[in-house]
Image (cartoon, rainbow, N blue to C red; front, side):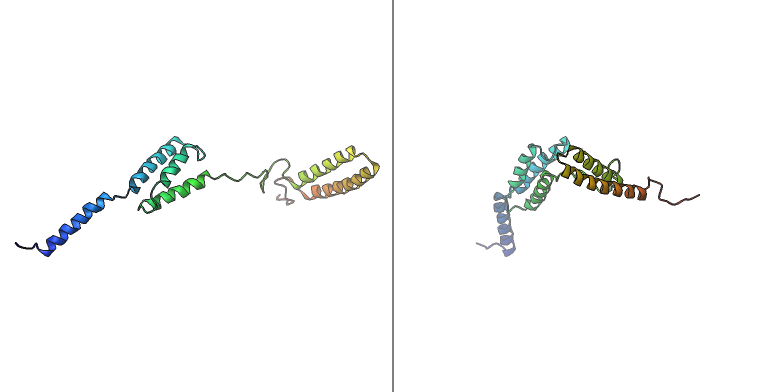
Length: 161
């Protein structure tokens, strides 16, 4: 009986290991593909990030085993989904640089003076009315000064003729 050539033995051993390693196949790529398919369906449907259907997709990405070679890709999708599903901060009621009624310093000062005049008219005592009258007079003086300094758009005080 002859012993097999050492190269043939090594090749057979390597093939045997490959066959056996196929039995313990990584389920991650298959789970990732399933999650990606559902992800793409919801994208194509235009589903909003807060749609409950995304919860299923998140669960599918989370089901990819931690030790899978597909886990880094699943983690990327999970991070993107979680970021998209976070509640957005409330929009501010006023924005710097806004234009229109109430946006200028003159409009703001005029509204403040009107508010003081209303409070003065609603005051119950003479002491309160006198105090509000003094504050209103100061407000009206400041309003006149503010109006004198402000110019309508296009009128910056320069004459180009």
